[in-house]
Length: 309
View 1 (cartoon, rainbow, N blue to C red):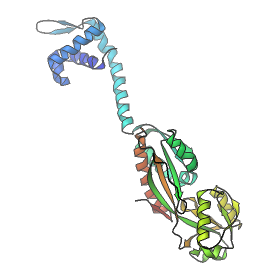
View 2: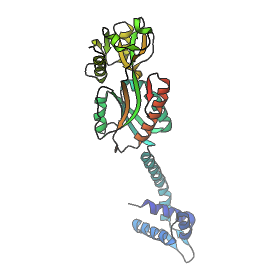
View 3: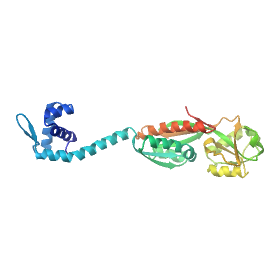
View 4: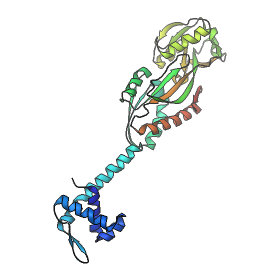
């Protein structure tokens, strides 16, 4: 295999017309240039210069190699630049996982900024709940995942993952527009003991958090309707079928539903970015930085959300 360093040296010598001038351009010694040309001659088994007492003259073989090497060296330069870009996270592919409410509210801001800053990184998005996404990150099928955890519902991520906090969300009480408490300001959870509740599926962190909050307030909530689709939950509340407790990202203001705070409730849902510390994909660093910036921007416009420090 021909050594690309030797081909570059050959090109410099042909262009300069002498070993000494080529050496000055390349930052080598004349002896090093001569040795590289000699090594290339051995590799191609042909002389590349006619050496005179005062000057050298390239042979037809040397001129042919220089012409053919130009495209190869240019392609190699492009490959080296791409390799540097990959190492710096400017080129490559980012496989991202997210849960639905983050996909709806946070990712449009974050990915738009990321695409502008890193136009040569291909982004692939998959959606799921944390229990679905975390195994994919650990298995290397995803580079980065947006996940969440609730206060009052202990959750520890695997020790081989790093996490970056992005947002802390208040839990907002959704009431039908005509509900007597809809104009009362912050509502005490105990005043909702006899309400029918619309909640996420049994066993989810949101449903568990609701049960524990209600237990602290001294009652067991009547959970008649369940859905993991917050659009469905809003629809049920709007129709007067019940009340609901949702994180701030999940609330899109609309007619027929009033969102208010629960008096004295400090529990939050926390949004985090999780990835492997030695994932081998430098694009993750830029993505996490961009998501933190996006979370700060979103928190400035979204009541009930606070960007993580």
